[in-house]
Image 1 (cartoon, rainbow, N blue to C red):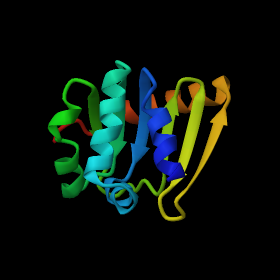
Image 2 (cartoon, helix red, strand yellow; image 1 turned 90 degrees about the horizontal axis):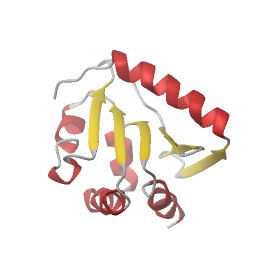
Image 3 (cartoon, one colour; image 1 turned 180 degrees about the vertical axis):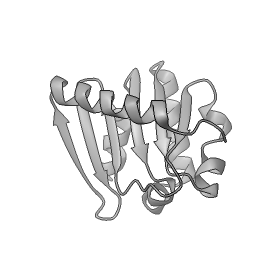
Image 4 (tube, one colour; image 1 turned 120 degrees about the horizontal axis):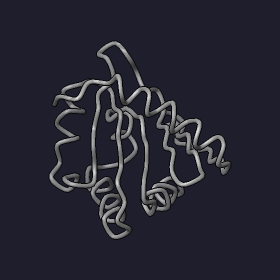
Length: 130
C-alpha cells in the first residue's frame, strides 16, 4: 500500500512534528501498523511530537508502551478537529487525507520549517495531561 510506504519513509526521520486524528488514522491503519512505524523510528533514533484531537480514544492510543521515550503528545482543545494528518519532517511536509486515502508531499525546506513553527506554536498552547 502506497500510504504505508509513505509513513515508513517519514518515520525514518530524526524529528517529526505531527497533528492528526487518531480516529481517522485508525480507519486506514491498525494499531500494529502504528507499532511498525514506531519500530522504524526507534531504528533511526528518531522522535515524534504528536498533537492530537482530545478524545478518550486518542488518550488511550497515545499511551501505548512502544511510544515511551520517543514520543511526546499534546491535545487540541475539545472542540478542535484535525481533519487530515500534517507531518513536518526533515525538509518535507506531508499532508494526508484519511478520508480519501491520499497524500501530498512537499519537499521545500522553507515550507517545512514554517509549518514546524506553526506546529510548535500550537504545541505550546495545547493540553499536556493525559
